Image 1 (cartoon, rainbow, N blue to C red):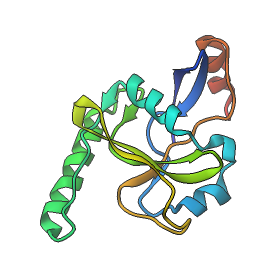
Image 2: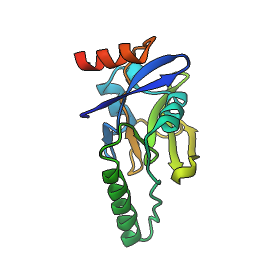
Image 3: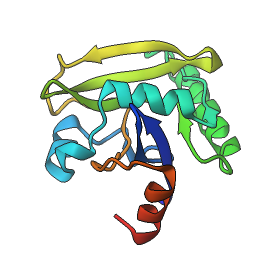
Amino acid sequence: MSSWAVIAFQGYFLIAGSDYYMYGNMSMGSVLNNFKTVDIPSPEIVDAIHAQATCKVTTPTRDPSDVDSSRRQSIRAIVEVAKCKDKTLISGHFKDIVIKNGEIGLYGWFSGHGGKLIQPFYAGHSLNYTDYSQAYRRVWGEKFKTREEAEKRIKKGY
């Protein structure tokens, strides 16, 4: 993760990764083992990130029975993310690994620029579960009263 973004959330400001930290092969259990629980976003934080994203990427759909179609969709998503390189907050192209009421699960994966939610919160997978469409975006477990305070904290480092 090379950059951070400040987002408004419930009267405070939070610091979130501008894009996803890990994706694909990182299981939900690995996220729990490698990061503090406060750094795992809630579904509400994911919604705030998506609403404030400066680049909303169209979700790649994948037909598991058609390998070539899956490759084309993945390549299209990579190209769309590359177009966002100068944007400060990218969203929409993965299901987020989230925490809700103490349960870890998946949430998000928004449809195109209309922003329709595809994946409501789902905690039914084992912690070893992983697939191509899930990712982890780090969110600092610290709230700030002003955007300026959050930006100063980014400069100090995590």
